[in-house]
Length: 93
Image (cartoon, rainbow, N blue to C red):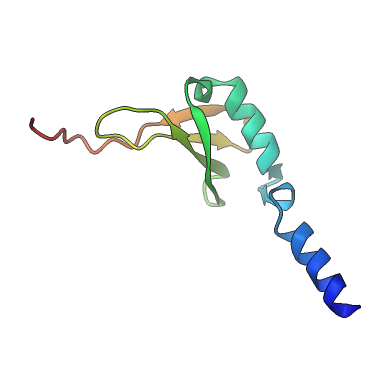
């Protein structure tokens, strides 16, 4: 019986539905991302909360040489924007 309770707790506590970042759920962040600038690409499953900046970071599937784009969703303003995270270096061909 105790094992079943622990399993249920882990399922709900660790599910994406339970993920929160400064009052914003992961699902809400995904919806904002899909409705805003981040709709240029497909959201990946890789994500994290930066509690220091009150932002969700969700990786994007967009091809741009030398870049690793992510969608940054501000939990306070509920706005999303792409952070291209470019190295500035483009390999010679």
